[in-house]
Image (tube, rainbow, N blue to C red; front, side, top):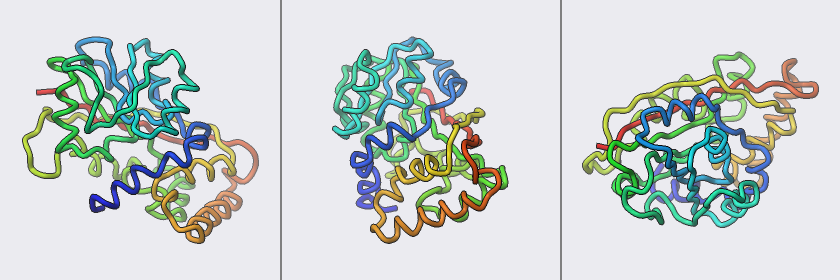
Length: 259
């Protein structure tokens, strides 16, 4: 994906902010706890916070959370759902916080959108000494047969390599590094996965997939065809054809320490 394409994907979510808030899953608490375990203190920045899915998990863990999000519509949803959280307009490349003001920076399904050549030194700037940077990704567990079938039917624009446990580790192993060959600001990565799940119906799972960047930027006819294939698959699968079901998931975490 070139830079223009990446920007198009990254900026696509605002139009679907309400649906994103309603349908996207939260994050496994055990995953957020592991991400924060080596943190030197309780001050946490949720960077690229979206509508606050990870923010809410961090609040539940007792962290002192600040949320930063570039999209105004997403930020509005975050402030509406979590009015007690300090939520600021900003981006990974321009964080509106002082030097060494947080102990950990976490990003939920967002780090792959950051320009780490710029965001790396900016994140390092706001981190306290020995602070932690961690990316979290919610993964559909394609080791389960029907989920694997769903991924095939959906296509990589809807459920891509970073969205499943069979490939997210290799896809995201270097997400903390600049692509330009510039100096790294963080140490060796650690990766871990934690069980997670979400209760869905066929309709709500289609609505969830419809909030993914690759689907949001599709031309209208292509998007409807993709979502139609997904609906047909879910209607034909015994695990998903009737009423509510559990979508088996994992939350994958990439964790690095500031050098």
